[in-house]
Image (cartoon, rainbow, N blue to C red; front, side):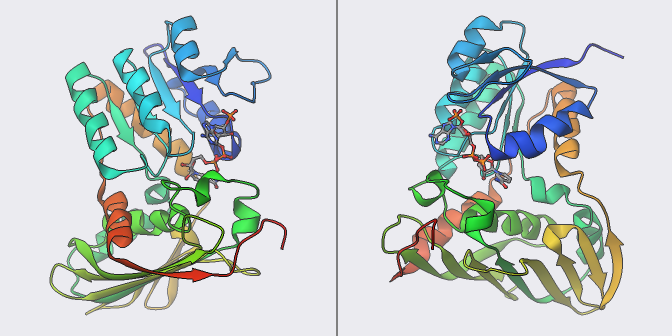
Length: 311
Ligand code: NAP
C-alpha cells in the first residue's frame, strides 16, 4: 500500500471535532498531519493560526480539508490550490455558486483534486433510494426538514449573516439528497423566506419546485422545531412510496422499513476524497447550492419575530 496522503485541516469547530477528526482515524489512505484554526489548537498535532501559515510551515502537506464556515472559504481554498494541494470543501461548498465555479476552474488549471462534499448523500439509505427511483415515474415529492437551531447551532453567528444560508444550512442537506435520488432535475418556481427582524438570513422557508416533467416538489424548512426533529423526504411514484427518514439513514418502501444503518457519512467522504486524488479527478456538483441560490432569487420575504440564542 502507498504512503498515506498528508492532510491539513482548517477550522477546528463543531463539525471538525464531532465528525472529521474521528472519521479520519478510520481512513488509512489519509493521515491528519496539521491543523489551522485561529482560536483552537489540537492536543497533539502541529497547530497554526490560519491556512496560509500552515501551508508555509508544513510543505509536506498534500491535501487540505476546509471545515470553516462558507464565508471566507474561497480565499482559503485559493491559497491551498495555488500551493498545489488537493482540497476538500465542507457543505455548502461556498457562499456563492460562481465562486465555487471559479475554484473548480483553478483546480483544473493547477492539476489538483477539488471535492465539494455533500455529507448527507453518504447517508446509509440514499443510494438505495436512488436505485429504486431510477426507473420510476415521479408523481410528487415533499421535503420536511425541521430542527431546533438552538440545539444544533448554539452561538453561531455566521449562519445568520449573508452567505451563511440561515435555515438552508441544514436545508441544503435535504436538497443534496433530492438532487441525488430523483431521476430528473428540479427547479424552484416559488419561495417564501421568513427572516427574523434582527437577522440577515431566514429561520424558515418554503420552496416550491418542479421536476423537468412537471411533478410538484415541495420543501418546508424550519429552525424553530423543539422536541422531535424531522428530516424526511417522501417521494410518491407510480409504484410504492419511497420515504427517507432521519436525514437518509432510514428507508421505507410502501410503508415498510427496509434500511436503518449507522452513520458513516464522513468516513465515506474521506475515503472518496482519497480515491479522487488517486484517480486525478474532481467532484464538484453545485446543483444543491444552485437551488438555494434560486430560492434567494425568487424568495418573497416576511420579517418575523427577532431571534435570540437565549429565548
Ligand atoms: P463552527 O462550529 O462555527 O466552526 C467553524 C470553525 O471555523 C470555527 O471554530 C472557527 O475556528 C473557524 N472559522 C474560520 N473563519 C471563521 C469565521 N469567519 N467565522 C466563524 N468561524 C470561522 O461551524 P461548524 O458547525 O463546524 O460548521 C462549519 C461548516 O461545516 C459549515 O459549512 C457547516 O454547514 C458544515 N457542517 C456543520 C455541521 C454541524 O452539525 N455543525 C454538520 C455538517 C456540516 P477558529 O475561530 O479557531 O478559526
